[in-house]
Length: 500
Image (cartoon, rainbow, N blue to C red):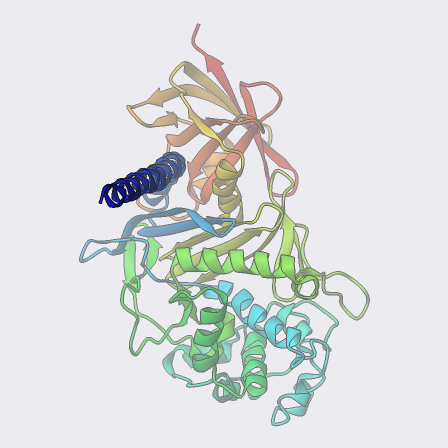
């Protein structure tokens, strides 16, 4: 009996020891994740804090831009390495109902539609289904034979010879087309302006043909192939084909600008050229698409070479302008700091838009708005993106009492006026600001121009909100002198004069 009790006591002691070990392990398991989660939470909170600072700056700038231009609404999104680091909207998508612009607001993409269509066609090329330099007559034998020799690459780089809008297009906006192939009827009777590959002629009608090539190869209408493409590339809800017979929820109203303010416009059909100007999206979804282009082209050198290699005329001249070259629909250039960018902008009734990719920084920025306004929207996109890329921090301007400004032998000076959260170049009247006042009239000329100061490791800068966008002036080695190149060769300079 004693032996039994001793055995039982030993067993209980062993179980107690095992239980203590188990409790110790459980305690470690419970405590360690909590610590890890707290650390991750701190990092996340820090990241959110940094993100919100950037978003606050964007909102402040966009709100001032609403006032300066009279454009009712803006929406901006920035995606870096796959994460949305900013999604900011300002103003109203419906002035009558006072509906505010927000993350889910949908805007017309105008000609930004072209690079989405071009990327869809590039996907077909990667699958071996499209030969970019083959005559499109191979894919669309029903075409007028004068179009047969044109290649898809020539269509996307605007060297096909196809014309842009003409007088005969007065009723294009009245009829709906269910497919790009059906919309080919709009091209009847249009002669080529030059032989395919010979000269640059910007043409949305060329993208009508490109859309028909997509439909012929995929054997699907664009209304079927676009949603499938978006699902594969981003999994987002937009871009979508605008259907004015049944507009998507959250679609912004369209506005035009005049001296009396913003006036609502009717929706006109864009189904005659879906790839040319017929898509709509949220800024957040568009920026995510842009990042996916960066990522996929980085992982697929053949895709990168197709999309972003210069296109040449039959004479061997690279297609483009002084600011960019044209690839497979995409434009390639540099921002004001020499960073490589891929981009495309758009303008149509009720919309002004741009998508810019920074391939080496893995950053994409989309800017959408609901009025067709005169703007240097590419410079605006570069200005907003560089704030993030350079980790720029807002700097107080209140200690600067006066300024001097110069542009093209025109000089001016005045006070820097500051309120609680805003500073202005008061009474700035150089020929540069007189020129700016010609655009986007909203009642009266501007005399006081909003100005913001930032510091960063890549140099101090001023951001000037004006009638045609947001422009960066970089410090010229001296913290008090800032300048920006205007056009091809002119320079606008601001000198800040500290208080004595």
